[in-house]
Amino acid sequence: MRQFAVIGLGQFGSSVARTLARLGAEVIGIDSDTGRVEAMKNDLSHAVVLDATKEESMREIGVQEVDTAVVSIGENQHANILVTAILRRMGIPRIYARGMSPLQGQILEMVGAHEVLYIEDRMGEQIAKSILRFDVFDQIPLTTGDTLVEISAPQAFVGRSLAQLDLRRRFRVNVIAIKKRVAFIQDDGSTDFRIEVRDVPDPDAKIEADDTLVIIGAPESLDRMSQST
Image (cartoon, rainbow, N blue to C red):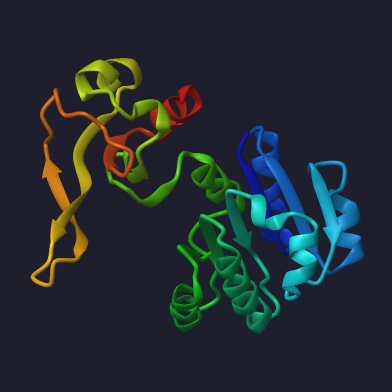
């Protein structure tokens, strides 16, 4: 079961936390406001009154063990940025942070956010579903109603070919590219990595652990695929 921390339980954060919990995730909800925490305690795995800007307190409740964190402190931009930086220092694999402006969004990315969420564009419930769907690096809604997503290759896909996975028949989605992390030797003899994009991959192409898949499909098809892995 995937584990999430949602820091900031205002209208947006509580919507994200409740949706994640309803979809089966384990969620730690954190806020410094007792009333907000009390309102959430029956909906989440854990709801804690805490000053999230104190790293030691965050570690005491096990935040460093979660897979994904959502920082949704809207009323205090300084705290939002500080908490994002603390989570990055704690080594959280995936951090989403609420941005109130493009400038704040740039700062959040600089201090460690993997993705900045602008809630005027997407509702909390929609964002929660997006976060829960694999490890999504990017997603673009298309005018056709389909969505293009970039995801980290699920463990269930690793070592199998596209033909073996048969995603088009099973889920009506198409892998249109695979981004591979390829090692190479630099002039000084050291090893570095570059990303190679393989467009329209061959059906015999095998998925490797560090691959990023670019997939297109209807949102409900992507949801079915995520639930099967």
